[in-house]
Image (cartoon, rainbow, N blue to C red; front, side):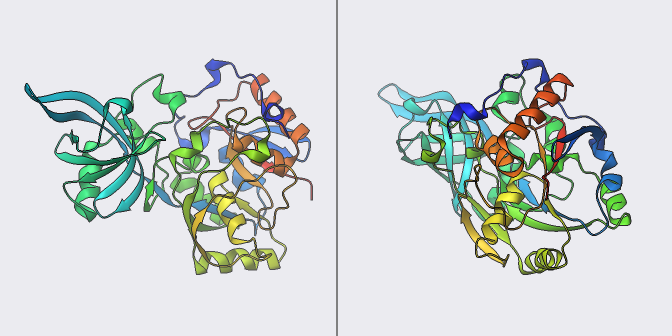
Length: 350
């Protein structure tokens, strides 16, 4: 398939820059096969069936965007310049891989100061990544990053406004637990404690898995033949309890509905053997039309960027033409798009 098969035109004013409050007030486009209806996230207890199993990603977003100064010795004495670093992946107790700006002007040995946190640039890669070694480690480093950093908002929001204190709550799910993501599992941002309680009272079950969402989720696809695209890898874990809960639901013929593409990609990775089992590691699974789903029976997800791997994923679940109809409806009905936008519940025909 060609990249153009997953393109669409989105009016810029439909990109949400702030979430709605309360969280479940967002609209929900329900797609049951080709049938579309306009609902709200708060309607989920009435939409879903007793026994349905929702799978949530319990990763926690790091305030991974750091602003500071670079210090470098010169013939005229120490010189400083403004720098910015976005943490990508932890490499050790005191080290992170990061994207740093201005990348071309930085070099190994530079010292970067971020408020009360300091790091040495120990290695510079060809892809714009750098390796930073901080002046503290472990839990002390985590605490310092939490104080010094800002939430790493997606480029389509960060280009319109800076992150602020509200984003520290808004860009984190209510069940965020395991620190490690540099982007939020955004479909889960629509849930609050009251909605979770109402779902449980309606007989809808849930379980948790962990996938640390990486900044690669925002990388554009640069090849026209989508089969040539290589996915970024992200660390994830399906624990024994979650695997058993999902396996039991499948055995009993109950629907397994991941909340977000991250949860879907992870449980499909863990189910590659034909049945789901406990799994831990890096996944670079790339789901495109023609993929045979082994675990997921549906998906709750926000609206995605055109020409993205996530558009390919939802098209694999529902069908390419069906997703074109979903997005045409969403645009005509003025749904709010992307991370802080509205959501959809995609239920393919059995």
